[in-house]
Image (tube, rainbow, N blue to C red):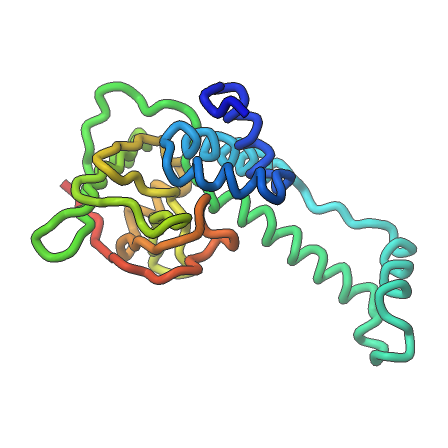
Length: 233
């Protein structure tokens, strides 16, 4: 394949995010994802688009006959008590699963694809690193939503591993803010209004090591290697 083709990269990124890219093709794409900023940007664009799409979805309750048929097919009636076979239980489980999926789509890549407004001077900054050696500089204008992450001394993690940035709200689980650049690269994205308010009141940010493409669960799965405060200018 000609991986230099921007159209091909975009198509593969879409399949990767949707989960339809499988086997050797997916492994080859993940190697490219680890090495090339344009591939990571394509993945971010697709994740952002699907995240916005997830916001428009409303729960739909299927007919009771459908749930009855599902319950009969997956579990014989005599293996579990009546409460387990309850249609209400399955509906509640379905609603919770649907809600979790929408949340995962939204928080897995909160950056939108719209470019940041021009001349947006940062009003919040953060330095992420060990001791006196900064690894990343994060700057944000929380009025416009423009947020930039610049790799200062950060180098690539292990093979097939990436660094993922997380917001630490005052309450609730960490929220993904996307993958961090390495090797002197810089990434600028626009943060949605809802997440700007959370970042303004957050306890700080954290960095974890994740599989290529980022956390598959919407929560940190690898070790958290750095934490930092977000300072208002």
